[in-house]
Amino acid sequence: MELDFERLYAPQRTGLGFTLPSEHRGIRSAWALIGEWLVSYAVGQHDGHASLADAHDWFWGGEESSRLGPAVADVVMPGAITSSREVHALLPYLLDPASVATRRSVIRDRVAPHERVARKKSGAYYTPGDVAAHMVGHLLMPASTRPTTWIDPAQGSGVFLRAALALSPDHEAAREALYGVDIDPFAAEATAFVLTAEDLLLCPDGAAPYERWHRFRRNLATGNSLFLGQIAGGLLGAKGPWRITEAFPEVLDGKFSRVVANPPYIKLPNHPANARLHEIHPVTGSLASADVSPIFVELALSLLADLGSLSVVMPLSPVVSSRSPFPQLRSHLARSDGRVSFECFDRVPDALFGDDIKTRNAIITVTRGTASALTTTPLRRWTSRRRSLAFEAESTVDVSDLPQVPLLLPKIGTTWEHALYKTCFAHPARLANWVLRRQAVPLTRARSVDNSHWSRMVALAPTAYNFLGLTRDATQADSDGHDSENPVALLSFGSAREASAAYALLASRLGFWLWHVTGDGFHTTAKLPSYVPAPTDGETIERLANLGEELWASARTRPLVSVNRGKRTVSYPTWIFGEVIDQIDGAVDIMLGTDAAGRLAEWHERLVVVDHESERIEKVKRKIG
Image 1: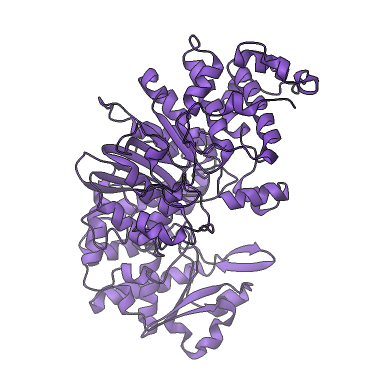
Image 2 (image 1 turned 45 degrees about the horizontal axis):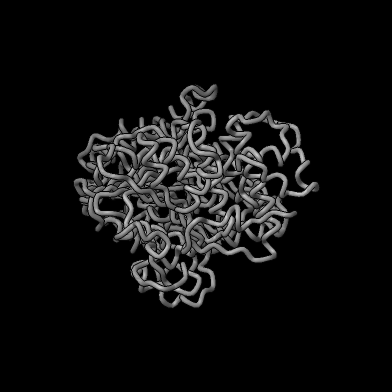
C-alpha cells in the first residue's frame, strides 16, 4: 500500500506524542482508509457500496486515491448490511481495532487470543452511547455562560467527546474545545474520525472532511494519563510524570471545565516511574496496584477547574468497597468543593453496560461552585425492555450527616430512608451484640461444628438478591438435598430464643433494607449484624422469637433449590410469607419508635417487581403479598 501516512494523518502540531513504528504503518493506514469509508457512509455520502478510493477521494477532496495503488483503490467494501444511521450510532465501536468483544466474551475465549490478551491488558471496554449521553447531559446542566472545555483522559474511540459535541448548545464553540488523551496510538485517529462524522451531520456545510478531521486531531494526545500531574518533562508519560500543558499549551492552567471518563479496570502496569505515582496522586497512587481506575478519579479532580464538573463511570467499588484505596477515595471526594453524587446501578435484570457485561456500576459526578452536598441513589434495577428507567431522574438526599459517612455510603434517595437510617444507627443495641461466635463453614459440615447447639445458630448465605438466605436447621437443608461446599456464616447466639429472634430480625424488611443500602446488592458481609438494631427488653425479644419460629416453620416447607456446576444450594425464601413478615416489621417499628413498615413493604415490592408492566407482575405480587 503506497500511502504517505505522515503527510496525511500526522497531527498538524507537535507535542501530541505521535509516533509511527514501521511495523504499525500498514495497519494504521488500513484503519484510516476504513475510517474514511465509514465516515462517508455514516453521513450519507454513499449507499454502502462505494470503494475505498471513492471514500478517500471524497474525504480529501481531490485525487488522493491515485496514491493508493491498484491493490487498494478498487477495493469495494462488502454490501451494506445496515443503515447509515446505524453505522453512525456504532461508529466508535466499529473503529475499535480489536474485534467486537465484551468482558464476558473475553472471559469465555470467544475472541481471537491476541485480541483477548490486548483487551485484558488495556482494561478497555465499550461505553454504551446512552450512558455517555446521560453523563454528558448531567455535565451540561445548568448551562454555563463561561467557555466550556472538555477532556476525556481515557478517550478510547471518542464516545464521550462525541456526546459532548452532539449535545452542547454551542456547536461552534464545542468543536474547538474537545480534548482527549489515550495510551493507544490509534485512539486519537479513531476519535478524530468519530468527531468528524458527528460534525458533518451537525453542520453539513463548511470545511472539507479532512480539514475537520485535523481540527479535532490537534486536540488529541497519545500519552499515559496515569502520570498526568504537575511535574513536567515525562514525554507524555513515556518516561515519567508530565503536565497536560505539554500537549495543550493553550490550556494555560491545565484545568478543564468538564472532565468525563470511563477509566480502564486493570492492574497497575510495570513502568519505571511507578514509584512516583504517590507524588502525582497522593490519595490513590500508592494504593491502587490491583486496579488503576481509582487513580483516574483522583486525576479527574486534579484536572477540574474551580467552577467545573466531572463525571466518571466505574464499577460499584468506590461506593461499597472497604478495600484500599476506595475508602480513601470516598473521603477525598467528600472533601471536594461542591456537590458530589453517586448514581448506583445493579447488574440484574439488566446491566449498565448491557446484558452481556454483568457488572454493578457507579457514576460519580462532582459539581464545583455549588452548595456542598454528598448524595447517593438507590441501587437501580431495570429490565432491558425498559432500559430508559436506568437514567430517569430520582429524588436524592444529602447523606453527609449520616453515621460513618463517607467510609460507609448508604445507597438511599428519600427523606424517610434518611430518617430511618439515622434511627437505626442511633439505637443503643445491635444484633452483633448478641453474636457469640461467627464461623465460615459449608452448610454440609455445619452440624459437625457444634451439633449439640445447632438450635442456637442461624446460617446466613454468602450472597443474596431479593431476600437474605437464612437457615435455622442444617439437618433440614441436608434432607432437602443441599450439597454445595460454599461456606455460609454460622452465627451462634446465647440461646435458642435469641437465635429465633435474630432470625426474625434478619428476615425483616428492615434487615434486608439495611443489607441492600449498605452493601453491594450481592454479597453478605460480616458487618451486617452490626447495622441491624436489636431489642433490649425481654418482651420484644420474646415477641420476635415467637414470630421467628413461626416464620421458619413456614419457610422450611418451601425450599428453593438452585444448581450450579452440579452442586445444589438449598435456600428458604422468607419474603413470600408476607403476613408473618408484616408482623415482624410491626414489632421492629415499635422497638425503634418508627412508622416505616408500610414504606419498607412498598420499597421491597418496587425492588422485586422492577418492571410493573411485565406479564409476571401479578405472579410476583402474589408471592410478595
